[in-house]
Length: 469
Ligand SMILES: [Ca+2]
Image (cartoon, rainbow, N blue to C red):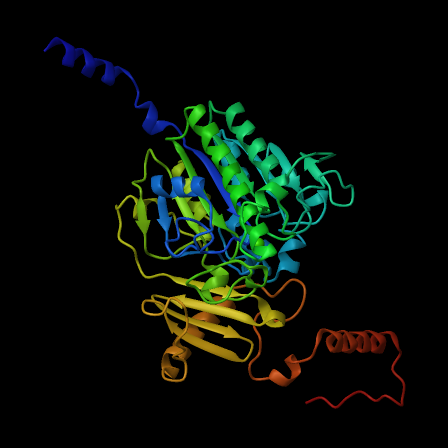
């Protein structure tokens, strides 16, 4: 009897260190990765090679219906960073969000740093074009990556025209960018293994330009050069993720690290991405544009398996903060949910609504409520029952006008709460006035130029004011 009593006494004296230790948090974002271009999608083509992601999937939770809040890079990143629909800030398009996420917004490191987290950002930022928008100025202790554009050359890492930054300093680097991002993230983990730490690892892989080391490309021989390069880029990103996991395991912090993996939007079909079985891809609000590979891994707390209810990239920030035990100010209003009670089986999934909108100029909008999804592309509407038709092949809009009206109203109500687009246009394409909206870019520019010229000219008796309606 003496040994058990001794053990019990020891347990009583030792604080429950593990339970009270804040988890390390890593958010890994792939860029333009096809839904089926990962091994953990059972419908992946046979040539896909992502063993490290597959290993993460086996140890974590695969979210089969994981969404991002937009269909291109920078708007979804604005949503991810703030946990709120980016449209609340008037950011609808790539041009808008890429011009800058307002500095007044509170993002991951600004919540986590005061709670004792070391914070780092690696890779693509795309939330502001120049150093004034650097992540180094908004809470990240360490930064290694590029700022302004959606894309970066993978080999030319010393170009002053498209610099790589360490912190706010321009640095000249060598190597393959995806490798370098993995190495930098792994080094950060090793350095801060005493924890807690937060790393935002935003690969530009597998976004264009489709570049990878020749020997890697040569391993694939699909008869399509773009496809070969894309697969090689995916493989190299997977290797980099493998390095990150090795650093976590070597540092003894694997178990208590909460890791998210997503793609920022769907794969571009024009560049040989595979989104099977989903319809469409990047630049569309069909599932192929907004449903992405999505993993959540926290071995100490979450049982491995599959999660079938829809979740959003907007959920990542609230979930991370809950895991870290960080209470947010009462006025903070996330659109995302803390997923931990659900994933731990403490609560049951409730029906949720999800919204997309890229403003009047692009003309895409969509809403999902329960299993129903309504997708608008300018004056074309499609209604789909995702429970039976994940590929959005069977348009029920004509058969079910009441459902179309119901979902349109739901989207209208949501959109009414959003800000006007910061750059141009209206919140949504006006279906009632299609003729006016069918102007080409050149025609629109001509109209704008004429309006500007008119403003510069003083009114003359020959140009009487138009009668008021
Ligand atoms: Ca992207």
